[in-house]
Image (cartoon, rainbow, N blue to C red):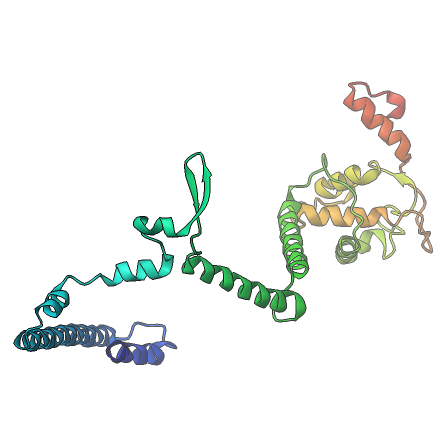
Length: 310
């Protein structure tokens, strides 16, 4: 451990000094090479230390065997020189506590099921250890996530994930706003969308249609009469394409589709507000019910002249 810390210390020091810099330190390779050299030297020293230790233990063992021989204890020498069980074998036995086959009769419970005997084996220590560890973990988890404020509960995680999902859905819908056109546009009712629509109307439309939609150069937006058809689809189409012969410009180059949908939806909310000094009605009375019949008839391939708007 000491050698490893000594080896990486110069590199850690360099990393702390170089962290704020964006450019590569010209001494990087010099420091890296020096650190690798120290690490290699530490590995060599550690290997040499292990080799010397093993050699020392072998010499000690040979001396002990020589002393036992001089005392004439050949049986002890033979047992001493017998192959020792490997550490892995000893570790495996301690972790499983398995019983040798020749000793299974000692733990036989006398139950025989079609030749399968039931033995009174002990539970493996590794299994017991994991079982006890799971109990400790369960207690800590219960306290941390359900009985205290250390970690979020399942309900809190659910609410957090729902908020994240809601934000992602809103972001996705925002990217889809510009795909609206006069064939699929719908009237918006969300207060935020209508507020944005009012802001767009105030910035671009009041000079012709009045601050409250009462009309001026342009027609009154608060009554039931429309020159180019009422409803969200006709309104969107008029804003998008404009009416150049009457001074109404096309806003498709200045407003996104989503913004045109918002301002059209806001204009529809002005109906029936009865502002002061309204301009006289212009165009044709718009009946939403009749417009729905026209739309249904058009989809069926029949559009009666009596139901067509001017």
